[in-house]
Every structure is written in C-alpha cells, then in structure tokens.
Image (cartoon, helix red, strand yellow):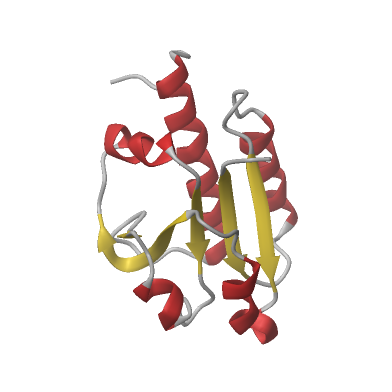
Amino acid sequence: MPRLHVASVANRLPGWAEAARADYLGRMPRGYEVNLIEVRPAAAARLRTRLPEGVRIVALDERGKDLTTAQFARLLSEPTVFAIGAADGLDPLIRKHAFLLLRLSTLTLPHALAQVMLCEQLYRAATLLTGHPYHRN
C-alpha cells in the first residue's frame, strides 16, 4: 500500500497534465509510490471522507509555508496525503487538521499545473532521498 497520496478536487485534467503527472508518478522509486485520490468539485465535501486514516495531511494553500527541496523531502518520511483543493481552496476541516499548509509558489497556478508541479517535486524529493542524480544542489 502506498505511503504517499495526492488528493485533489478537480474536473478531469487536460491531456498534457495527465501525461506529465503520470510520467513523474511512474518514475517514483520503490517505496515512494503515490496513490491518487480524486473527487469532482460537485463532491468536494467528500474528499475528507476519502483520505486514508492515520496519515499526515499536507494541504496545498496559497498562504502556506515555502519549503526548500530538502525540507520538502523530509515530508516523505512518513505516510502523507498532499491535498489540493478546487478554485476556492480546500474544505476548512482539511485545512484545520493539516500538519502543514504548503505553498508551491507565490504565483497563482492553474490547478492542472499545480498537480504537475507537486508530482515533479514528489519525484525530485524521492530521488534526493534515494541518491539518484535527478536533483542537483
């Protein structure tokens, strides 16, 4: 069972974003596999019920904390769900119970790009932790 999860509220991603997300997640090193949890915006309230029990929640939020790649990599040390809300953000209860509010950028990002960026950062962090040369300091 994967220890890492990406939970999102979104309509279907554009083809380019699905392909990029699948590429990064498909390259994840053993032990860092990622499970996708997706709900449509009309069912956004159900996202909370779909999150695995007992995992740490990292909520993506434009007002969240900025992390370096090394700091982000430390988040992969235990079971974690990375939650991405719809255009209006995440359910307030998810934000309230989050271990961390994380900002991917100070820029406003479209949802599809945020998902791709998150998956690239998960891949980058996992390769950093496993000694793969993808990440360079």
